[in-house]
Length: 116
Figure 1 (tube, rainbow, N blue to C red):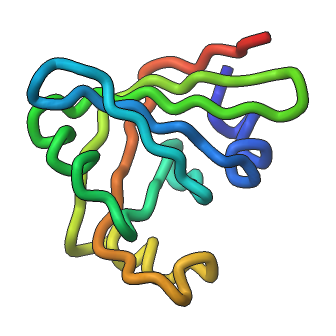
Figure 2 (cartoon, rainbow, N blue to C red; figure 1 turned 120 degrees about the vertical axis):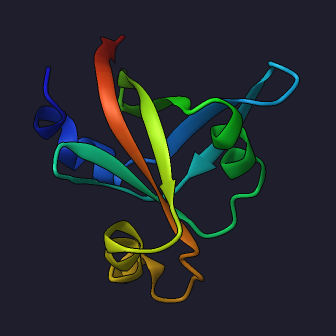
Figure 3 (cartoon, rainbow, N blue to C red; figure 1 turned 180 degrees about the vertical axis):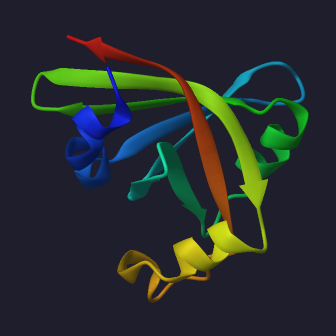
């Protein structure tokens, strides 16, 4: 499965983002918006603190979202950008108009699995 196959669903969904913290325990947050660009998932850092710290320790993430009774899990390696092209990208999104858009989490996808 390719990200383009589920792009519309992902971009409309609330997404759970899981990282691993410094105690080697899972940390989860829910985000309202993600975008797909260049075959990657792009997430804006508006208010993330622990998630960004976790990515410095372990860059692997798991994203999970549902539509009706069907879901998808995306696993990949994330890189954080607080300047440059990806920051400019998230700052340009209408969804971020009233938010700080401090940075962009860019997920290079390793696997997409359909659930349910």
